[in-house]
Image 1 (cartoon, rainbow, N blue to C red):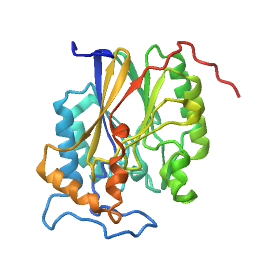
Image 2: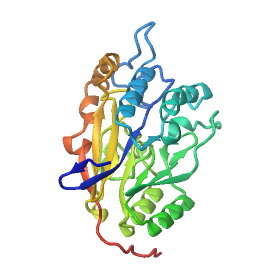
Image 3: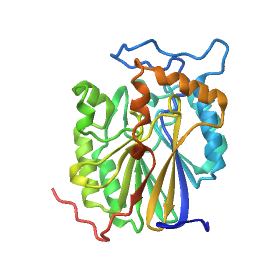
Length: 312
């Protein structure tokens, strides 16, 4: 590639991500324990809205010719084999070996999912960056976790990395804003406290890790924690409803650009996502859309070639 960003140097690779696809879902705006406005459904006889949104997203992603596509959880609504086949028909047929997937809470019901589970941890080396993808889902639980073994795997990977490391999982880490609606809502919205502490501590001592990128909350959000400074803890909104999001990462020599894309190529997809603005008594649009700095931004490569060793 010979494209250049004036401040970041040569473009090395492009990565695209999707999350919260929910293929098979038929009622939008259903949240356990919350009754704010009626859920939305596709018009009678219309194509299911998750199929409309995901097909449009896959087409837009294909148009930028990414090196890798990461599907980071909630690929399906209930974890059924039929729903997974629909996901595969859209994404695996479009991207083949370029597609990396991990699971979300919707893909792991209490009974074993009908499709083959993703690895607990997987990585791929690209020019200028390594991608690490973690399965954070727990069977039958909305919240997530990372095992000690997963964290040890990531610690070892980051410790020997010779390039920036982008880490992807379905669930974001815990933080103060996760507790605004009470402890039960916080537990459902993120990694459990132990997993969050493990991951935050790992990031603190491994400067090769450039960012952590999640979904699950159906919002665009970039958070900074006091103990990790400017490090970005990122959430990307869902494909299947407003605003109809997917994210592009352009990896340059000295930095990474996150570019938020709102699905816009398919008029039916745009009409559906606009309907979803009104969910939850009209609060959903501001929540899901986020601030400008939550959607598109530059990620600097952290300085320091020598990681601090693990302690404690």
